[in-house]
Image (cartoon, rainbow, N blue to C red; front, side):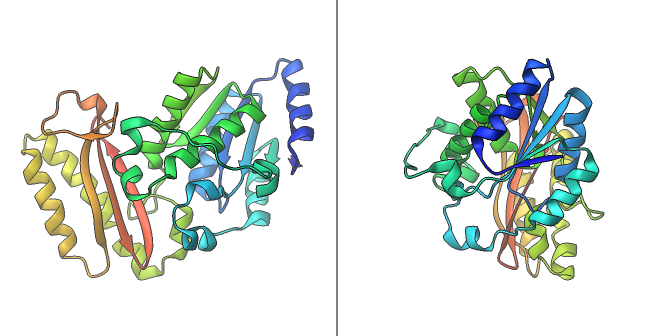
Length: 282
């Protein structure tokens, strides 16, 4: 496994691989890796000749400085996991390498960035679009792999690829979960045992809500039921629960196409913010 901290040597290696007609699969991460990230690497290995991973805690997508400061970092452990997973190339840039002296580019994703995560984290998706565009330009992969847990991010990246004409096949990989259904996340490391157990309510809520919708329960009743469930929780505070259309992430009042409908949720426990989702046609 080759590791790089600078852009130009990385580009030279990737160019050499492309000249050998090797297909490059790219997995961007912010480190603090877990089984969910490794599942992206494994999926990339299935359809790529060379699997490349970036580890970069991107400051432009954090609207809360404290969240950036407390984001978990475990580079040596991450490299061991990637080595065992069969990763070929790892990029570990510093902030100065990625952004230099200027860092003022903004990307507007329209309706996609004004709801749910975009509404609660202003500027977040502009930062995501900025760093992913740079990474796509550096790696020039044939395929890129993102987890379903960050569903809105996936569709932001899809819009980025479609509208900027990146020649990249985009793959969504199903969310990996802990035994109680809690979506695996780097943020879970900040939860204690009791908080992890109680956070299982998030996925349970999604499952029960999807079942209710498919059984014909009106959507407003489903939303009201979720609100009541979280009122009964000692630690979990519901931030939002919405039933949306994946084309633009706007709320729906009725289901027109289950294949384009998702249930999205965000909640806070122990000062840790968790998100999850369920595609209705799962």
